[in-house]
View 1 (cartoon, rainbow, N blue to C red):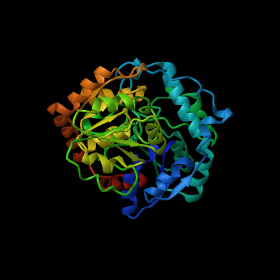
View 2 (cartoon, one colour):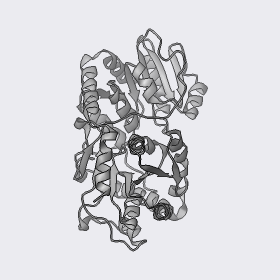
View 3 (tube, rainbow, N blue to C red):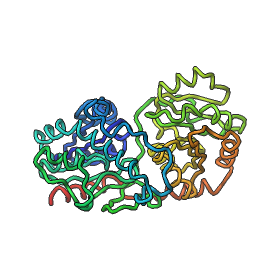
Length: 393
């Protein structure tokens, strides 16, 4: 069976789909992974075959900028992802337009490849509208895969159809897909999005690239704390100084997991000192098993990798999606939040939170509980039969 995996936009979306793509390939199926060019190296690093579609400037083309100029609000009501009626309608419209814009830029290439290769099934991250259109153009099923966003793009009722969504289907003479989608969800039970979709749980398998392990990684006497803003974002760079100050003197070894650009900036600012190490573009799933706790920005990947290793977290969110993750982790009792709120960190609050992160036993206990929830879900290989049954209908 041929299975086409489709990622929505940047490299950070790819790791979510990789374990299921591995499982399908190991079960003997022929797998291709359609991504924008900037994500193709990540697919190749995972040992999978990349199909570049569109180009990396797609969201910045002048003809595609409509709706992308609106600055998204930095604060939304709590639980906005679970109860959309609480949210900002303009925010929701701008977010939907962003998804449509990306889909518009890749759709022709995606449909052309799909028609030539003829997959029996399309598996896509839940933000990829283009994948749903391509599946419709071929007349094959599409299965969504939660990718880090709370929820994704779907239309359950005809009265909820948006013009941007309809136009993508009309390009190929198709009626827009309306109905309850099927999504594979790797979140732990307690943090799963509660929306009108048919969910199939799957164990989250951390993967964030490959690297050579440095000699010191498995050694050291002091407890280790990972500090990361993710490898594809820069939200944490401006607050690394206060974070390092708060951790220095607490008897821990600090490891900054940064991209190459972030690392250069940190060195340029003179933030490195005794007890602080830097790992550039290093896979978090190799670092976090050696750590006692994590300080991070509220990225979905960083959050889930930490939970998969049972680590308590201090989350410093700076956007609505990061705030949503911070709320989920904090309400589950597995972490703490210091909300930057656009004004920068309160140094005293940060120091107090760091102390609590390292000393509060209940945080580690609840993080361990979420790890057990993750490990109790079916492995990706156990979902392959489900994909085969969907394709055979």
